[in-house]
Image (cartoon, rainbow, N blue to C red; front, side, top):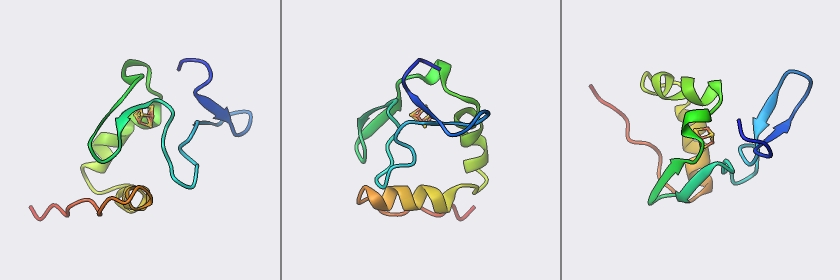
Length: 82
Ligand code: SF4
């Protein structure tokens, strides 16, 4: 991961800067939330980010995503009724 993007929590854990703010926004996120965003370090993104999409597709993280969305004034994610 590029320097300066993470805050060290302890000897083995770091967190992407901005992800734990009251209005969370990863410093690597580029664009305007609610319109169009993308990861600015996609090829170098850390493991948890790589694992996110497949787990989100089966419903993990929905509550956390919706809390973050609400803090940016966005509605909850649509529920997949398949
Ligand atoms: S995928 Fe990219 S923008 Fe999203 S949290 Fe990870 S590093 Fe940040």
